[in-house]
Length: 250
Ligand SMILES: NC(=O)c1ccc[n+]([C@@H]2O[C@H](COP(=O)([O-])OP(=O)(O)OC[C@H]3O[C@@H](n4cnc5c(N)ncnc54)[C@H](OP(=O)(O)O)[C@@H]3O)[C@@H](O)[C@H]2O)c1
Image (cartoon, rainbow, N blue to C red; front, top):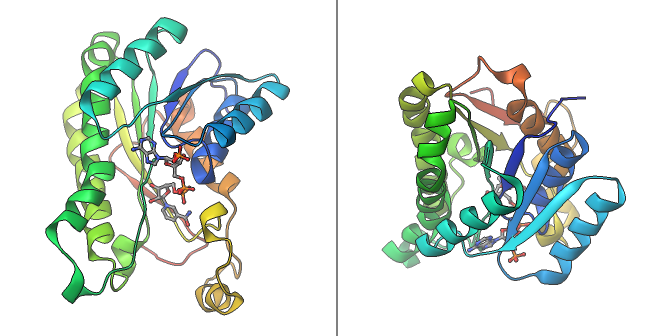
């Protein structure tokens, strides 16, 4: 059990998938959870009710994190509800289409950068001064193993996740003197709602060279994020933690 009592945590993209599990895990450990999402109100409501049913503290915020005004408005609202944010989990993602190289256009790259570079930057900017003054802060970026695997037809997504890893290291260096840490959790393929309908063959192919021999669950990611959000991780910064059953060794 990690003690996150009284920590105010923002999780982007928490209406479903990994974000929902991360929000649940953080709430289970005592954090006050601000769950962000875009438009799926019914799923967000379900996640919120699940957390509340277990005694967790949670509020939801439907804002587009790729829009600067929306981000600053959301952060103001969270601060009014809970006080200053201690932990930001950059998890939200838009669609992740596979596109053959000859069909890829620059906007495909910008589209992914919006989520994995632009939104984290806006969220940091909206919280930076307060974090620096309070000498408190954890930035937890959700990356991906694709940076090591170099999946084909996915250059736009892989490049944006690579940029997210790079900014994790640069921010860690610059924020360290203020006691703010910045790390990245790199999940393997963790089946979530959007993978429903994926063939058994694809799952078997993925696990065939996986040391642990099976795919992980969203809770596996939530537990590592909860560790990074807690005081137990206070001497860890600028790191990538792969949570992928040993698929990669970097
Ligand atoms: N699952 C995996 O296998 C896997 C593997 C490696 C890395 N990852 C990474 O893990 C993270 C979560 O992935 P996932 O598979 O759990 O995704 P997901 O199930 O598709 O969920 C995406 C979330 O992002 C939200 N969102 C979309 N656009 C948004 C916007 N403009 N502003 C705010 N929120 C927005 C969605 O909200 P609405 O529901 O309201 O649209 C939803 O809550 C991503 O960064 C992904 O790259 C996942």
